[in-house]
Image (cartoon, rainbow, N blue to C red):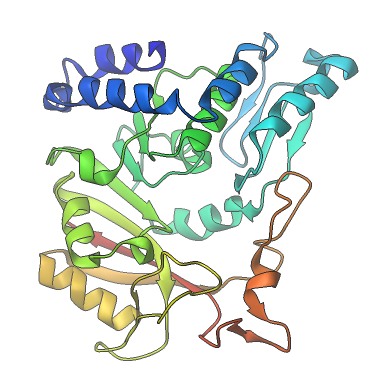
Length: 321
């Protein structure tokens, strides 16, 4: 539980201090549950990571931590063996002392699409809901955020994040293994991100309200999600799976999503990017050897999923609380 003590101390005298009324007990419960799965083995990986002197860090144009010559070739090979025990690596890529972790997603491409539409992150307190292994947390910090907090209940994602943070222990970047349902209404974050989560929620309007409950008045929501073509009343509800995923519930049109956000009370709602996911942006790699996008599409018509629905189209929407 040593991972969280610095965060507790950090927020104790800030506008996030009320979180301490529930957070330590939640994380203690999470840790007790984690010990019953693969977490112990992943924790051994973290314990065996090499100690290095990191003199070079680039979080502005990539997540590149440490120079190659700060690790011997043998140590880098051992590092690769260790980090591959944390596969699959889905969001990235990361470069650690010359070791390139080629993740399933080119999350840097998504960041490049999002970044031009953000309120400046300098001096902001930022929350990323469903942050995965934390790739975008580092990019948010690189863009100037004062404090970056990610939440995601996955044990594996938490361990992947801790592996990266081992080489760059920035005290302003944290991942907490909880979900949005565990959070009190803090109404304190300057910017709240939610990227690739909305369609996994059984009640999307309740989820959007939960995001709003974390924002201070005037704060910015950055929402990235699957959408379908259509008008303000168009919403796709898959009968079973979408792109082989069982946990996809609602995929709205951009017009419907704008309406949802307005009904909840967001203002200045804007669709700022629309992008068809390509086979170059999401694919199997040496670091993620499971099925990927090409396996989820109709092999004879990549404009459709294997179930016959429109292929993944992703929108970025910004709005003000």
